[in-house]
Image (cartoon, rainbow, N blue to C red; front, side, top):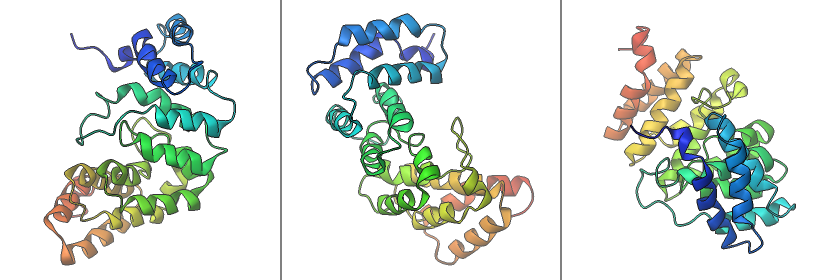
Length: 249
């Protein structure tokens, strides 16, 4: 039987993560970290397991978040060579991404730099959300830089991060009320050459259509005028909710 996702976050995962950290933080006690994780992990479901590992890691890093971030950035390992692998090869970085989400909000630029680095190895689509809530203008400015990034994982973070109804994530209620910032990200990525990014953009506009159908109908109407094959695929996949409602052909 295949291992459940939550079961990957255990003592072995703590040791794997601890070894990466210790290579850049010589006083890190791998055995102590793994033992704390092992004592508390077993009754917990996925999010709480990741939270436990994240909190236990944070207490063993320098108190100054910028110093901790320097260690984390040096411990991430090489970027993924393909678009697949964030939840397989890079699964062990989920507690690191959670650390940025939970503990980094007082250091915007440092945390956005970490999100950009993490997403090339795992994903930062959850980590980015408190920054969009607390610092919407600054975070959106960075995301508009990301839509031009040469790495498709970073471009995907720009679209996946602003999804207002991203599954298993906190909802972005401000974007549910006013989707224009998310629409602007989708528009910038409407002809992205990566199918990986296109799927994210399609899911983004599908999310928006659930609350603002007319905005997406108008948006894809504009896109049709000079649509590439990539854009046509995004339109077809991203309007699935509208088609079910009979609002678009």
